[in-house]
Image (cartoon, rainbow, N blue to C red; front, top):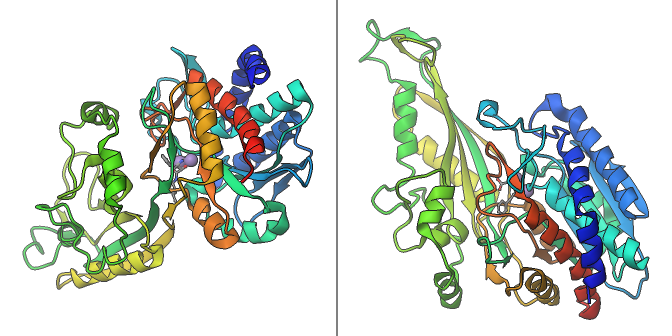
Length: 460
Ligand code: BES
Ligand code: MN
Ligand code: MN
């Protein structure tokens, strides 16, 4: 079974690459207001590609933010119905001068396709279109009913997603969802992801004098906002244990079971390879008592993502700056809630504010952590499809990144998701020189094509 699909995919792979390259030329950066027309153009391009692949109903759906694409091919009400989710927006591409080839001029080097969005997530969405095309061109019909929802705001927090889900109503009715926006554990070690962390963000602004002051005339008598901010930020973590010191931060954390931890210990984790993909760091850090994998998958974090204040130009400038600020995000694990954690962090920052300055904290949108069932029939179907194509049975893992819609499907629609992604740890997502290994792109298409056969065999 599946050879006809494999043959079709092999024969058409060069075209599958060329088509993806056209989609990757569109700079659909959701974070930049200037690129809003590009995000729309991207949605329209993708909608046309979905029609071309054989989806029968295709629509660009408006939201309060960037548009999404909805498509469906309903074959027979007696067949299982699957909702495929992905996103067509991408992260900003800067720093531009670190790209070997420009981020929106896709280039193949050494069997890898380099472009922003190559694997996160345009390439993996495109795998779904080509898997559908393979079924329709070889057999004339799909063995399942498919609905496709491709969002345009995932990289900026999916803030209009719940409204979009409400607007689409019955059109999202399905037995389960399939999401291809993750990676595998390592090259040659396929995996299925059953957990994603959530995200909570705050922005902090520390204000002192109403203007920058001469540091000789005023320094020594005026609280320096950058120094105050540095102390406040440093107080949020205990350097000896690596634990976050924010009161209540760990209260809602559900720890993994002993069996789950044992499973992680048996994975072929290569610390040196991890340090290499982490930009060549000389050592890892972590929270006392937890491994590197656990620190990234099952433990919450607090990260400073950006910091500003004072003079940054050439030469020196002797001032006490008027203000300083920072952006902070926390990765969350079940059952932490984004609003609760943002409030706790804000409270800790206010409490740590020294005399002579004021602190203003604003919460930024986030998303909730989610665990998906490892024993769902659709996970078994995905496991067979992956095993057949990789030639090795996939292992079960969690990931540290966030895909807020997966939790929305679970909470709002009562729908479970199967996370079937084929990215690699060295794909440099969100970073310069993002790439998608073309053999993984090809295998991803074959896996998804086979998945629909497997789902038809074992309905959820
Ligand atoms: N595809 C990623 C999430 C991801 C990355 C999952 C690696 C598993 C492994 C997604 O596009 C992403 O980057 N999400 C953001 C969400 C945020 C903006 C709310 C993230 O994790 O930072
Ligand atoms: Mn993604
Ligand atoms: Mn991303």
